[in-house]
Length: 107
Image 1 (tube, one colour):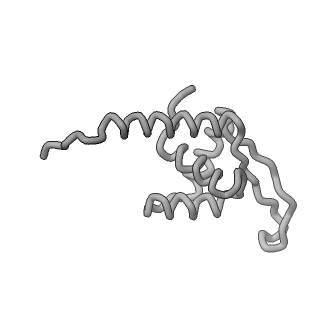
Image 2 (cartoon, rainbow, N blue to C red):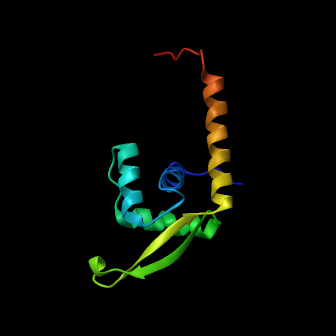
């Protein structure tokens, strides 16, 4: 399994925080809260398409809503493979942190 990029990790983490599924706008807000940096919708949707191709996310169209002018929202859901990839990435982070614990950084 390939290690996730930081942005992929952020999006999968945001999906988990939203109960495993969400449409794009709440995910974007959560990532912005995490990073304190802007994420344009184009970046978010391109990343979601990459995660779908990798099998880490599934998508489906929701029912049309009057708020969206009758358009349906795309609902993204983390898959079992996505959960495993996120868990593996988090384990690697923990291992790195343990290796660094107690080391002094020169400056």
